[in-house]
Length: 101
Image (cartoon, rainbow, N blue to C red; front, side):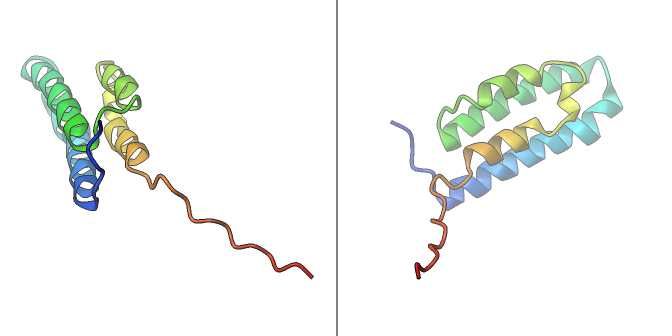
């Protein structure tokens, strides 16, 4: 059974996703090839494990993990978007009802 998604877990998961995307977008392109490729792959695995640990397994993490392995896609903040999707509020507030006349 999945762990409850507490506000603390949501904040931590979002921070991890944002930090991972920031590293991939701003830091790793500076070291293209060589060491950065291995570090990027390791980062993907670590982020996936951390997010699954915080949020529980969610199908939205699978395409993100696969897409991040593609060369140009890792410059898109896909971990952040997937995490926002997974941690969104599950229950929407009901729309106000119009008074009948």
